[in-house]
Image (tube, rainbow, N blue to C red; front, side, top):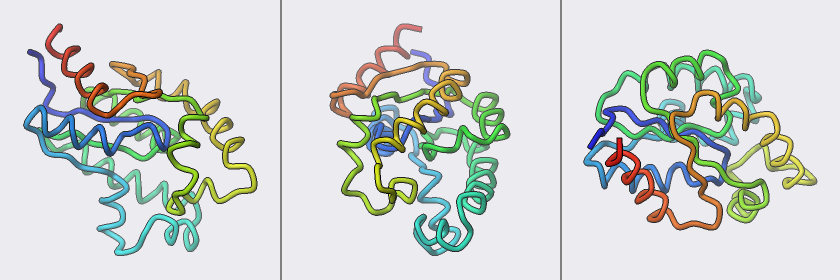
Length: 172
């Protein structure tokens, strides 16, 4: 079985990157890391607070630094934030340093999974579903461009997605 030593999960908010990442890491005997959690650890505040004081640009700068550091780790499954791919340097590093898995799902599925979550600054808008559709239109091509594997999480359990990824590694 081909088991990459660095697996990077990309995809929109609500696709299941953190949940699936934890289970995948456990199944493969790897560590699990999450860029949003690392940014919160480094700053001592939550993501909405960073957005409030530094705006999205400030958050993206912090995210870029975290990704630059974290892609150097071995034996890791790394869940990235949904917007990580908006920065060219992040796309370059992720594609060059590991095996990228795009966890995809529809904006409607994302909305269903995230609409109650107040820790998602980009959804604190009058029409969160419209925002998700707009973000998907912008980011989907970026996710696909750097992905080594695309897996749909639409209407699926984390366990089913993890099994599909492991079957993929067993078949290559």
